[in-house]
Image (cartoon, rainbow, N blue to C red):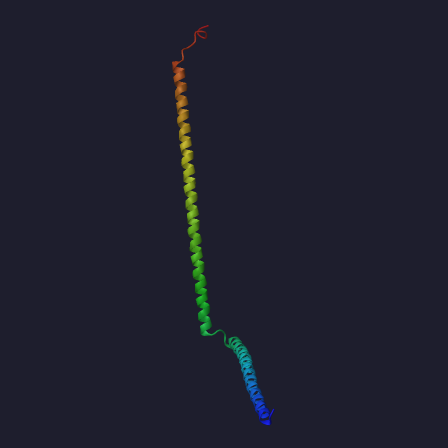
Length: 143
């Protein structure tokens, strides 16, 4: 091998090393920056939460929080009213069904009583007819 070839190979190895180093540093810096961004975002969120809590402790809820709370209360109230109306409708239907059932039972009892009264009347009429048509016996008269 000649000296020229050796220097050419060495130059290529140096260039490959430089290229590998640039890629490594780029990857490392991108990873570092991404990690740094996540850390800073977490810190900022923590500070904002602490500031919000301190503000609420000193000044009470904000207008937006009051509005949101009022809206949520109204929504909950509407849901409760809707559920109460549905329950009242169910109870009304159940009461109506119970009344219809009781009325049907009363009608059956009245019909049974009418039938019983008719049978009793018929029996009484038969008894009267039997007495009227029955001939008196001779044994019991006068002696």
